[in-house]
Amino acid sequence: MAESAKELLDRVQRELLPGEHDNRLVPLVACGEAPLAVLGALAAEQHRIIASDWRTFLTLAAQAVDPAAREVFTSLGTGEGLALAKLGDFAKACGLSEDDIRAYRPQPGCQAYPAYLAWLALNGNPRDALLAILANFAAWGGYCATISAGLREHYGFDEVGTGFFDFFATPVPELEELYVVALQQALDAGWTPETSIGYGRLLQGYELMFWNTLADLAV
Image (cartoon, rainbow, N blue to C red; front, side):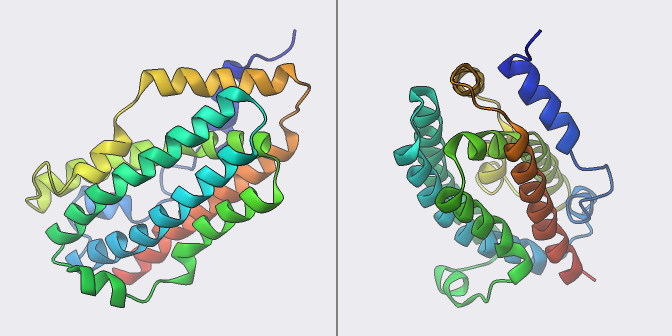
């Protein structure tokens, strides 16, 4: 019996989910041991990532041939725009001004993720890019929930300061249902996920590189 889109997504998310100790920064935030300067670096790096991913998702939306995939990428792009404003509140809570963010010198290990995502938009099939991106969301949402709790408990951040992480940690059932519809449309059209899983593995690796580059700054 052929694997359904829901079964495929669940399987790939399980296969690509990082190990408990692979991400070295999130546990530091969770227990209050990450310096505020590292949190500021997180805000500045994310500012560049969100701006890049916003354009990447809209590029993928323009390329997508499946209606549901086009809608997914458009929704993700809209979400990045909303998140960018919330990210400004997080940066302010870390003590950063807009001038500080502009003057910040990004770390190569942090910017590998958005660079690769942009590469997927230019060189990959949108169907392959879709599964690779969705496979990464399970870990990202969990990281954001943990960071939000740590910021409230150990750093005194309020709901405005944690809004960026709360935004990504909050499930959107309608959008998650659309993910499955988009993948099913691809499967029904004869698409196979083998190449996409390879992309997803690299994308997950680059995300871990992001977190662990920042963790190295805390040493």
